[in-house]
Length: 165
View 1 (cartoon, helix red, strand yellow):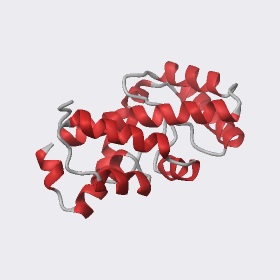
View 2 (cartoon, helix red, strand yellow):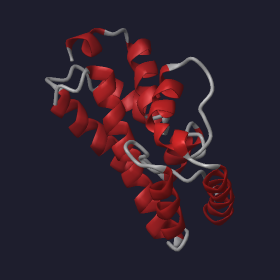
View 3 (cartoon, one colour):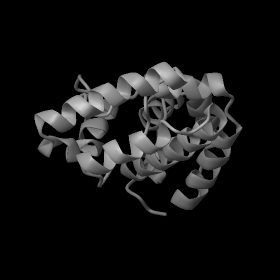
View 4 (cartoon, one colour):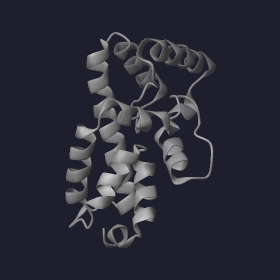
């Protein structure tokens, strides 16, 4: 935590954007430094995520690739995304096609990318969750998206700080 607390403000902000791409999130969590420990950071991050309005959540969603697509680029966020979606590496062509169709249906229904904390999930589980979530009403789905974003952000904060919760 000491290394994160010691970062210049712009570097801390950039590091936090890799955890959650909402500029409002990154600014608020940066401004609240220093953190005693990982638990303190996670508490502030969770509270900040809970207060974000939907436009701020949409900013965060825009940085996430579709499930089944590989994040491009050399940056920290892209590398983390590729690792999080590594369960897709074993997906066959039929499953990839079904996920692509499901992604299109989801985006048409809800207006944003299907976000799920993919860490540890295989392609079949990702597709099954997508199909269930397509049945949600928009309000319920927004709640699920917030919860999934919180899970992803928590995992990335642990990667950023060494996970000393």
